[in-house]
Length: 100
Image (cartoon, rainbow, N blue to C red; front, top):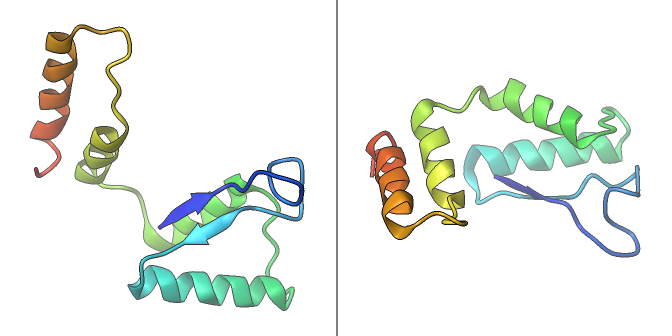
């Protein structure tokens, strides 16, 4: 599941009525998202901030496992100003705990 904050005239963080777009790839997360959006539309539920939405997601699906955290680190790691060797060492260190 991903949450993308839309930018532009009607989106973005300046609009308190707009949290962003929730993208799910089917399964339990998709059903949860549909239910959540239905409750929001009927005003049975109020989520005013992205932080509140993240808390709701965490409450529903739990903490990320260490393996999940490592996979996320692998997806977002950047070389930056490091040498190739330092970057590769960091990548391998993260990969060891990722299940890959």
